[in-house]
Amino acid sequence: MAVPLIPVLTGVPVVPGVRFAPVIRVNRLPALEELDPGDELSEADRPAEAERFGVAAAAVAQRLRERAAAATGAASEVLSATAQLAQDRAWLGAAEKAINAGMPAARATMAAATQFIEMFTKMGGLMAERVTDLKDIRDRVVAELAGLPEPGVPVPSEPSILCAEDLAPADTAGLDPHRVVGLATTLGGPTSHTAIIARQLGIPCVVAVGGLDAVPAGAMVLLDGTRGTVTVDPDRAAAASAVAAADAAAASVANWSGPGATADGHQVSI
Picture (cartoon, rainbow, N blue to C red):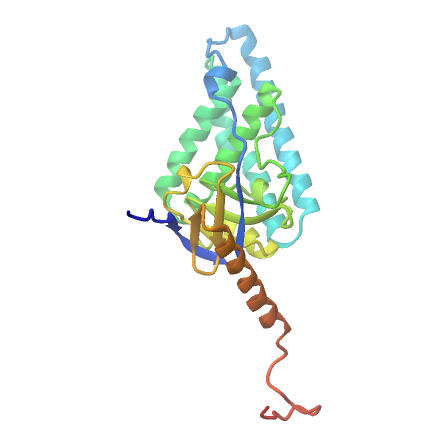
């Protein structure tokens, strides 16, 4: 009888460490059709709708600035940059133009963001990495317009591993490393915002993981940020042993004070 193989997904290791925990996933918006019937605005309603959009975008930017002020280091810098993008006149102007042509604010937000997402993707490089930021801003503005809670990372009731297509700065900067003990994403690279903030927080992280989208919330996974693997539903005893061994190795490195030496700095063989 053939023994089924344990699925091991591979990606790019970013932050070392091994963790075994259930998967949680980012809360996303309902479909646009559920939020906006798509009826064309009358000319009389368009100025008020444009103003409503501007207020929503400003509120999102202000919350991002507040998070930046509360954060430190790279997380603060990344959040500040995202707040600036939320008030960028180019994409805001594209949305306002669509509203003034009769498109409801939520649908105009989606359309304008899509226009710039396609542009950033074609430009590649660092601009392509801003795509995740703009998608996050888009979703937050639409949620604000619809009177819904901002989308984002749920607060887990137990230590968990956060899996996502990609994570925006607002998703990662506020993570509690005692609750979110590992990060894995389908997209991203060593210089992505997820990687930068994961390093600052010391959360084991693997990016560019193929097949990760098929792993459901609640699945038990073993994340190895040193090797760049995510093992789905591993043997629990073996997983616990792997975590213990990795923690022991990390503690040994942390406690090492260098080669033996006398008080005046001369090395001594031990």
